[in-house]
Amino acid sequence: MSVTTQHTTPTELMVYRVVFALLIINKAGGLIYTRTFAPGLQKLDSNDYLILAGTFHGIHAISRSINPAPPVPPAPGNRRPPTTGIESMESSHFRLTCFQSPTGVKFLLFTSPEQPNTDVIVRRCYEVYGDFVMKNPFYSLEMPVRVEKFDRALGAYLARP
Amino acid sequence: MSVFSFYIFDRHTECIYSKRFAASNNAPPPRGAAGGGIQNGDVPASLRKASKDLDETKLIFGTIFSLRRMARQLGGADDQFLSYRTGEYKLHYFETPTQLKLVMLTSPNVGNMRTVLHQIWATLFVEYVVKSPLAPAEHTGGKGVANELFEGGLERFMEAVFRPQQ
Image 1 (cartoon, rainbow over the protein chains, first blue to last red):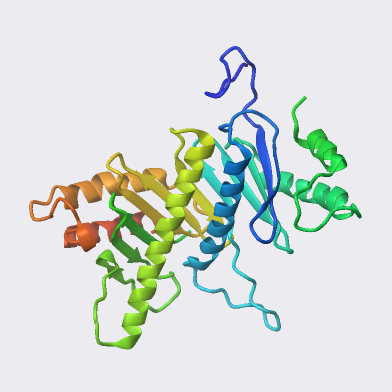
Image 2: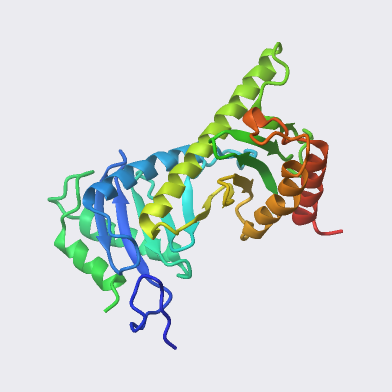
């Protein structure tokens, strides 16, 4: 069964579920890694991605403060769990999954809306990041990620052959 | 499965209707504020509350405006921002061709509310607000939106959608 989306030529065979791109944002809101794996999103230049990352960082913070839910009483002896920001965003052409690590690094994963288990995928990206970027002794924290092994491992996991 | 609040923004980026719904197990009754305006100007507590509500509507509008722009940038000019979810709530967005924006905040386990928002617009807003002969064409400050028919209809509709067990 051949399935086509609006972003590819009709003669191409494409499966519905696809990962479009991964962005990594550091604690301060600066973009430190961007990579597209499959066509499907509009072509943006590096400046646009930087602006997008900064905007999303701000929106993520605001989404925590407009939380309308009544605060849930914490378990006795524990602190109240902190409010979370945007975890996923739906639009008609893509779904954005955001995972924030305990150190404040955000992983934005852009997938097609039908892609299942996006939280598992983004956690695996976090593991790959921990293994190849954090454990790299030459990587400076909060700086753009330029680690070849990370690129290769991520490509092996996410890029469709 | 519960709804927390509901907002309507017009094409002049103003909040023309906002409504908070009580949590099902709490005492405080639901409050509706038309246009987020100040109701009792003299009492400090309600002044603070009203300005807090106003800030919240502004934050919500800023959030949906930026997310809509982001969706257009990434998905193309015909892409529509639909909803987003955090750990505590889910925000549903529906925009009409007249650039009227309906925003609903619910608990995170709720499914797609797009048809619900469309129905609210078509059967409640258009019927009771747009077609009302007394309502002005532009609802600056929320004037003309919070009439009884619309409010009552909205309450009944929300009850029917979120508490169907009877």
